[in-house]
Length: 620
Image (cartoon, rainbow, N blue to C red; front, top):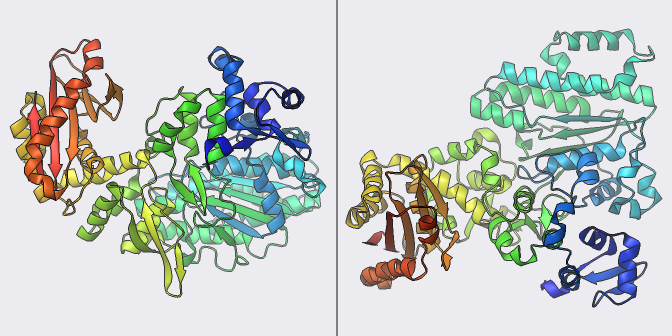
């Protein structure tokens, strides 16, 4: 969709203009926003025209301080929707009510809004002493009618999150689960006020408080609490569980998998299987692990993955939502940069941006860097890659060159078998957000087949860090040492020989490699120098963007600028000319200017040309 075809409604426009909806309607009626037209009871306002009005009226830089802040890491719906810039996802409530599923599991990558969505559902449905409808009356769900608004604040709700259950032993994990359950019992203090609990229930709670429950008894906690709440409120109970699979993942990586999977199977089944006190349940996580019978017999839970079109717009930001945010921040001209770094996901048929990274981008006044990549230690991807076969290594090399790979998928992949083959490895990388479909997967009688690719520059950074650093660790210390010495000494010939040796002895897929791939390769190779250099990639400097810059942290090291060129195998005899071209580009565009402005006078320039497993390095 072209930008001029993007329309927004009056509520969205009022947030951008920081004025009442009535005033926005007045502007439209007076013809002051070009192209706005009435549709039913609302107005359709061209985004481009609104941006022009904002610019013409001086509502950009001079009003930044008045804008709502962006919530970073805050998962309280009340606080985010009431005090911060909030992207309205409340129609998720409507769709859950309409579908009337007993148990729904949403699998999405981390930091894609799952926890905030769970808190939104809790705030909407939970019966409380205060009127929580005020947090929804200016949201989309309230426009949907009495069928939905009549359910607001009417249910007892159990909410658990396991996102922080990350311990090295089963005993510690069990203790963390116990504490989460105990806190949820305490949260429902109304149960203890009127003396209506049975003696058995009081005994259960007393032993829960003292930590005296067996695994079997603890696994019945959901069943117990739903019954107590339903008896007290005379209403069935809703169960919401966020990041249900975090303890399972931890069990896999820390070698207590059988203990945790046995417990979680019984724990979830106790509350969600054939429970007469259950209104409905919603779970979120990264993976579906049903092959382990984790959800055995749970009345056919509905599983919604990133391949499904339904609910696709509720986790992550859509193109329209990001454009509105950019206009609100006065950064409409930054859309291409935002797209390059954080767009590229495909959920169902919906284009999705990484919400964590986009929010951080706007909160930092438009500083582009890999925010999502820094929110996890990527431990599982390291385990997968540690034993990867040459075939998988070559497939990943293709992905890092912006190619698509064609694989079969196993969407019910289980942790013990993640590394069993291509289908399980690439399925996990897809579910976890490290890959995304290039088009609609094909369903056949023998399985699901898909073309996969990297979503964006941010994910490419993870591969540069994890994949290439893994390959780097498999090389001899001599090769790595030679590369580092060559950089310190500004020795082009030494660097050229070290790069050639590295490529000959590492992964096999180099023919037709792109400049981006070689760029990532070098970035991974010099990662070990980050304690002595600030390493920056693809940043503006001088009269363009350098490929790679190394700013010394100490006074006795030279600054470094590298520019890369990649040529086809048919041009491999011209590598010297292309290396010289790269070197001259550094000079003509003055990529070293900002280093000099920071007082660095000793700056080594490397122009590097690649073709297949060959490299040519020129130095200045």
